[in-house]
Length: 508
Image (tube, rainbow, N blue to C red; front, side, top):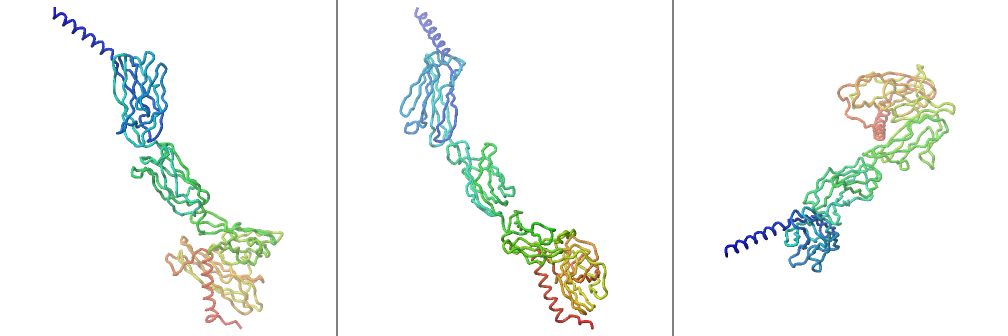
């Protein structure tokens, strides 16, 4: 009898236990987001899933506590799904309990409408939230971890840019990365790329921030283009860009100037307004007309008030020369009568001389002759000088005697002086400098043509041999001012020496 009772009781216990096991639910809880920045308020959603068993009718969530049992997260608004109510424990809140007023969460279903607003701790770390779900007779307990760290990248700042600069100047800038919490993102390790409105700017290469940078890095840049310039920093992966403030960039020191208009052809009495444009080493162009100086020109006169305005007064082809900060440039100005504009304007700008006559009579009166060297040998890239003598064997003096050279480019040859008066039965010497560019080869014939105001001319040829080795110790730069200084200095020495020691006696 006793055995029967024991067996019956045991069987009943087994049945009750089996019933309890079958009824007990299996659940899980997820929090989204699972990570966010320090001291940042985020709306947080809890998703409760019943994987099997009895309906979940109660959900309890405990806030992580610090060493003094104070909540690390500050709980704000709390939401509840339909058919549920909630209650809280503590102030500030340390525990939230949602209680179903209906059937709860059945097996195989989830509910993600539990919500809270939570402000994260002020220090980074991993924090565990304890949760418990209950059905009608049992509970299921576990935890979920949230991570507090740096806020996601939100923007960059660029500092150190001047409001004005000069092309070529190098300066330091600082790029800082910030999170959406407004704090420097010291854990930023993204890659940034630099671009600029200045296509000539010297910019850093793409840079990947290191953890040791702590979200801040200095870089060197230089604007080489003039005008209003800025730079842009971009993190392509994060799709975040920042454009700097604008810097007003001025051109650098001028290294070259040009006269505009060039090779002008007009009538006697007309005016020409010239502009002088300078360029720096970065090819930035800027107007220096007001600071430029224009050389005296016998073809006309410069306006006293507008010093860059030239009024033509005499026929011929003249050279207009302007200078700025030791830089010199020249261009031709062809002046014709009021009914005819000169059509033959030199394509090469002469570097010295004025009144370059292109139409020379073919006759060669016997009373005027030229004495020139038979042969001149010059290496490419070098130069040589020669003396050309105009002999006036006639009984009348000649005025405005000038020498032009044909047979090569005009910028190869410079003659000093530009003109001379040659009295009857006398001679005058001219210094001729021939400069051969470095890339020239082959020989040629130079034709020296002497002409005067009286229309008297003389012609004599010289063979120019371009050798393979330099024959002179000195070469002259092409800069007009530098070349002019050299010409004047050499001419002065030669002419003074010639006048004192080697001048030819007059013919009797």
